[in-house]
Image 1 (tube, helix red, strand yellow):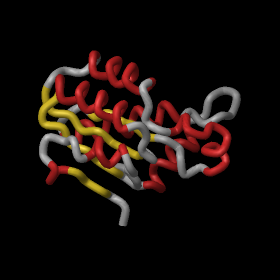
Image 2: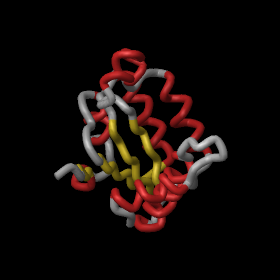
Image 3: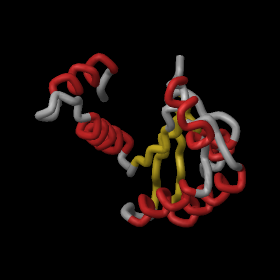
Image 4: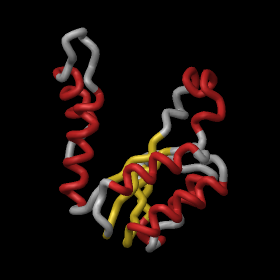
Length: 142
């Protein structure tokens, strides 16, 4: 599993022809590595809400809402039924929309485990607690 300095070094050397960092390439490699480590598919629901400049610019568009249902459906279709891990970093959002995400996950996956690398507030806490075994909610911040 990579440490933060290794991730930074990899991103720095994976530049596109225009000089921009190819974050997607690094993201995909790290998620593949995580999936191989936990031996199950990994979904990510992460929001850049700690970036105050971006958060002010988009307002409530950083919260869980009905639009997320389509994304969860699309991702769930491409994965096999069975166990899944969900990496979750979110300020929360609408409880009703969160309930629909829980239904999508529970209709296809079991067991469901949540990994929270930093923060899951409000409705994101509700989502994390919807895992099929509450003892498998991991919070990684030190």
